[in-house]
Image (cartoon, rainbow, N blue to C red; front, side, top):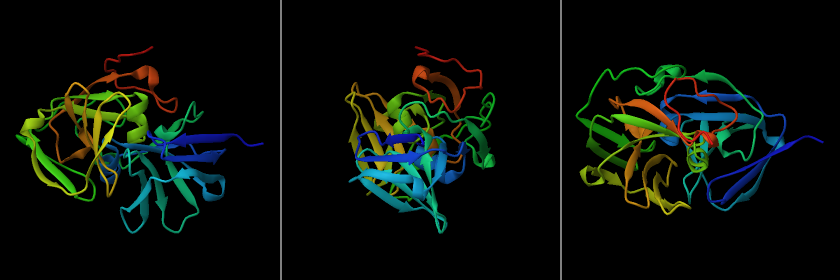
Length: 258
């Protein structure tokens, strides 16, 4: 009997099962994946006849292009699926899978679109630009805001919450919420996290945007920035909770090894 991989969004409104074997993981750095995930997206894939939804009450779809649609949770904003048009398969966020995956990251694609604050592999570059203002938005444009730049130090978080919501792991920078200039927030949704925090996301396209801790600390997802961030990835936290399908090879400090 084939092994079955189970997975879900953070709130549990969407759950699924995928029958092995699953394709090895591909990390995508395209602008669309960076906007929706808040950093970059990593996914496995499986034929549709070996995939089944066991719960889909909160599943929403956004057609991000003529070639594909993206599935996300309308309650917690978790980035879950990518379904190519005319193909009998579905890509599944590796971060949405429960427990060890037994997979490895096989390749990186669209690396020319990677953010300025990291490299797909190896140490992050030094900031080449220091923009005085940062323009941020979701993929569909339903939510958009500006804030002072540059982004400065950017932290990667590998905790279960961030991996479930982003589909891989998150990368964000601290910001003063009072300095945000909202240009549009027609589609802004806010979800409550188990720890008492709040996460902002787009209810139309599922893009991850910001996080507010229970203590009021505010951070912005680096992938939401359009253009240069002027920031640099400086550390990894909660690495004891990282996925088994990727390594951390940039030489930056790691906290929470467990």
